[in-house]
Amino acid sequence: MSLPPSIEMPTEADIIKACKEFETYETRDVMYKVALLHIQNYWEKPVDMADAIGVLLLSWNQQFYRIHKGLDLKRVEDCIIKNMDYLSELKGRTINSL
Image 1: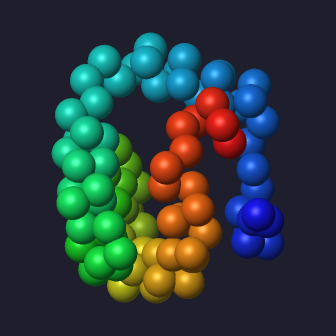
Image 2: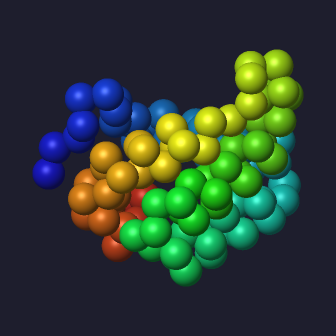
């Protein structure tokens, strides 16, 4: 399995550091849980998956998208479509197996 050329795989140390930072600043991960459930329920339906990712991105990065012309959900959908095979390979894995 190879990564698409535009995705750089984070190291284990990068992931651990990011998780610790997240837990420090974000004590409630409700939006993540809702988005994950939506993605699981609508797997292989790129429009619905993009909506779930959009909810997550907009809730976590509201200021960024307000300043930078909003979130283009069509681009998110296109990215999902382009990478669906790779995403399907990753679907059953845990973060520890990556």
